[in-house]
Image (cartoon, rainbow, N blue to C red):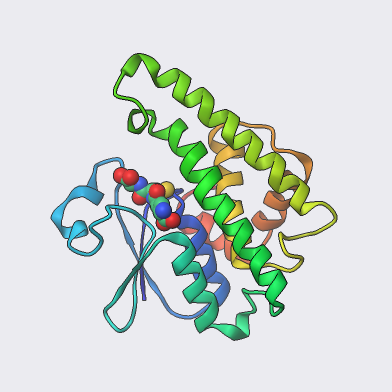
Length: 205
Ligand SMILES: N[C@@H](CCC(=O)N[C@@H](CS)C(=O)NCC(=O)O)C(=O)O
């Protein structure tokens, strides 16, 4: 397997899952700042121009965070990255989708790439402000979900890897004060050996 990633991008969550699983994998850096995602070497692999992109051992390519996370969990059942119970699985998907599709794609993307949301450069500050509101609302929701629990569905699951990267962006890139349960969750994640290894490998310490 090979993970195509960019340091500190959302791919960091999939990188964490690969370390949690502990089976051999390779990484290939895609320099998003230099626009490597739009070059033919990358678009011939993933025409969506996005990381995370996973090249599997059979030569096929898997994209989209939730799909990659789900596939990794299902193909490594001994690692218990999905809850057993159907209701808990549904809750896990609910949290995973909210972290990726709402907190990241709706919130942080407005902050990091405001030009994607308005043709008018004068409106970009307003777009970023709206992004911050959406992120804050997202963390407030996740804070309630985490109440009384160490992880989103009790024990560690793939949903935690997604919440982790958004919390990491909030606390470390935006200097945001996370709500208490999210802050505790981020610290719990940062204490995991797999996460520490990835932080070191991606130069994020
Ligand atoms: N929906 C995608 C989102 C992936 C995504 O937005 N990745 C960002 C990095 S965090 C990216 O590759 N951006 C490059 C670009 O848009 O040019 C997923 O779930 O994997």
